Image (cartoon, rainbow, N blue to C red; front, top):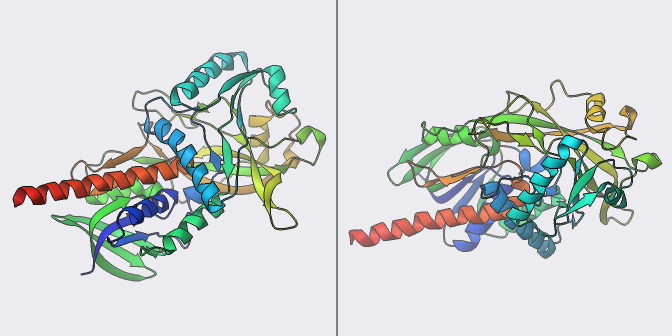
Length: 402
């Protein structure tokens, strides 16, 4: 039976970034990445608004807060180094009611505690200086927020990985992972052909299905993913003067997740909800520029099927009802339907899982939702350090047995 040193399951931004860090650290190891879909990044990684978050929303001390700030810096460095289109847009988080004002102060303090640079509060008049058509009572401005062209980012990581000795397979679905004393036996279906191989270390970056995959190894793994679909529309900002936006993301105060999802303390989990995000386009010369179109979304819908991208999509009226308080000029006829995405949300828990398995220590599990796109380089680096721990312990054990 063939043996692999490190197998990475999942070809989204977490799996790709992990593979790049690991191939750099361990050029003499056999490293394989497997992805069940036809294209890398086809699920969460390629179906989001491409925001480079600043860490205004996340609880100080959480994995999300820590890796968002570090990831913001690292993904920016990556984009500069490899010519991935990105834009330093800044972001407005807007209070639209008197009740929102106190909440805005709360999130301002969070952003400061988390180390987001240059955060400041804006008055109603100052909001108009940034985005004249946006209505709000006050706002928090986070200058480190930006947007990244996700398709180019994923393609660039794939191409960089292709310049290494790593093995990358798409159309390869993992059917089973069985623990053994010296690692795992991984069973896969590759385009209809089923085979098994041994792997010393497994990195589970399987996104929406990461909980099911870890339970293949350890049935006692307690976390369960509840999928949350995000639906997107778009409008042309030049269609009418009252629709014009200068080109920055605009959010409302974080809202409870639809469906009443709770955290580990029994409190409602929150989400950034439906917002406005500028997107990229190509000009006549082929250069990537900020588009005339603005993404609207994600309008979030709890679902049970992790692969249900299309059934019972929300009508444009729902988007307008949700956002007209921010952009009064928005009308139903302005909106065009766009893509959908599905996020991992962990039932009864409000942070990421990024750890070695409690029972089978050669398994690393990463269950990552937003801001996972922003944090992908930082998460990949952390996963490589968890693998470092595995190899360090193996060396220590081998030395002790001599």
